[in-house]
Figure 1 (cartoon, rainbow, N blue to C red):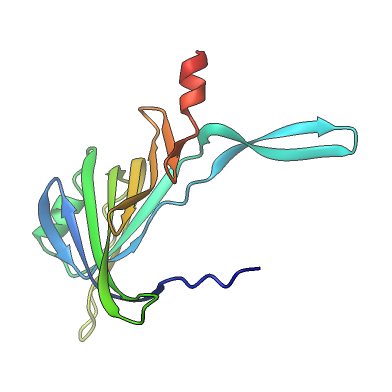
Figure 2 (figure 1 turned 120 degrees about the horizontal axis):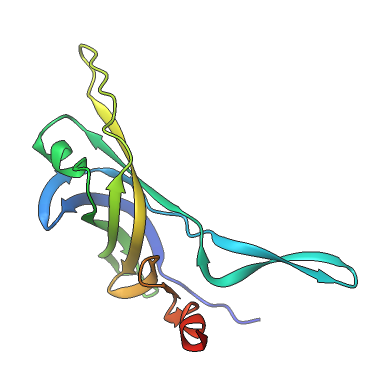
Length: 171
């Protein structure tokens, strides 16, 4: 067994949120979509086994948590398919010990599911959770694509391998 040394990913320094190429918020909290594969049941001599069906993905949802009410909230909540871009930086300790700032980006095409309820309390900040129904999700870490799922275009690419392409070639 070899001793592999990896970069250490540290805390997030800052985030930004863009809607249709316009900066709408800074320091948002973001929950990116979970990519859940549709499962099929295979019957074997020893029973059943659930296996992912290549290229089929369940519904995806992302959530933006924004502080404060402003025109940025209005742009986030436009009831149509919007292009959201999220950028964030984080501290990275490289294998040589050097500490740097690394960047990540996520691109999402989605429709807001709600205009959130706004709770106003004297002395408190307004915190809003906006869930998004996602049709396209692409995530990059330091310029390298990690995942791209586009439900409308039939793409399910993880670490460079498109698991849905074999379906399109056969149909």
